[in-house]
Amino acid sequence: MNITPHILYLGVNDREIDLFEGQYRVPNGICYNSYLIRDEKIAVMDTVDRRFTKEWLANLSAALEGRRPDYLIIQHMEPDHSAGIADFLACYPETAIVANAKTFAMMNQFFGELSAKTVTVKDGDTLSLGGRTLSFLFAPMVHWPEVMVTYDGTDKVLFSADGFGKFGALDAEENWADEARRYYIGIVGKYGAQVQSLLKKAATLTVEKICPLHGPVLTENLGYYLGLYDAWSSYRPENEGVCLAYASVYGNTEKAAKLLVDQLQENGCPAVALYDLSRCDPAQAIADAFRYSTLVLASLTYNADVFPSMHQFLHGLTERNYQNRTVGFIENGSWAPMAIKIMKDALAKSKNITYLESAVTVRSAVNSSNKEEIAAMAKEICLRMKNNG
Image 1 (cartoon, rainbow, N blue to C red):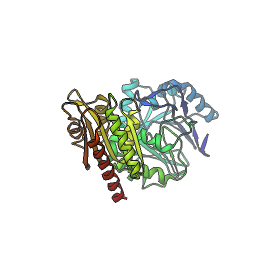
Image 2 (spheres, one colour; image 1 turned 90 degrees about the vertical axis):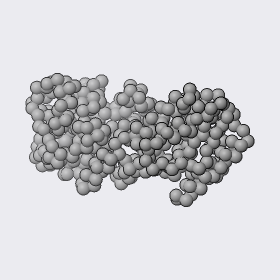
Image 3 (spheres, rainbow, N blue to C red; image 1 turned 90 degrees about the horizontal axis):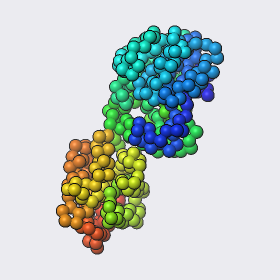
């Protein structure tokens, strides 16, 4: 696949995988992207997962059309992108590996000492391929410390490493933003400040195409994708709406949560995402907690704590720097309800959290007073969103 007359796609689709990084569900698989830049000299951008190295090398051989690569550029050492280095060098031992010092240190950890020519680059360094020059921009912690991105100023292409990637194989028909959001919040979400730094660097470039290491090449309406990344990395709500996440055992906390959904819809709430934390994809629930302006947490009290699935959900939020949201609480406890205190304590270090004045305490089962409290909470949420709009 030609991205430009001089840049070819070499990647592969993985439809065998069920969990990415051992935790993220990928029902539509994932792709591992690699690229070839043809000029007076030839550069290969990254490799692929070890299970697909043979297929990737066949793609590379076809694209080379009898030529030999001069450089293998490694932007990111995570094994789904670097596992083919040793096999590549077995085929093309004369090729020089281009990477930064941290990348070479990790390469030695993964492979031991490789017998290869090397070119160590620093932030802002360039590499001439003849008719074009590549520029290297360091992007530490997006999402590993050695990450760098590469800019081809001739074709105005940004090779963005894991940035602007998404779950799903290239032949999957799915909404880009939904799977890119889940991917970004799960993998990069903790490092918003570092993504902001990369966006500022990218803003100095004229970019017409973005080539990530996962997901499709982005060629149109790049402002849309950049805008989403700016919102996600700034921890700004993407949409006005409510993410309602609940943990229930006998259905009473679930009933309270669903009554709130009904009330929100009656009051004209623009969007409500409801998650049973014991059964849903936790990465999707976390992604929607970041997507929407309001989060409501509903949990029973369990062993003087919250229910385990709620505990895990709260940890998933706070480790990704959850902030700048409105949060409300529903708790349940037959003799000593304390879930609200525990959930609020879990968010204590989150910045710019506004708590709803309305709260609901269920004692065993939802009663008429709880229904009134739930109605009041829905009205408060919708009024706040109306005022924000």
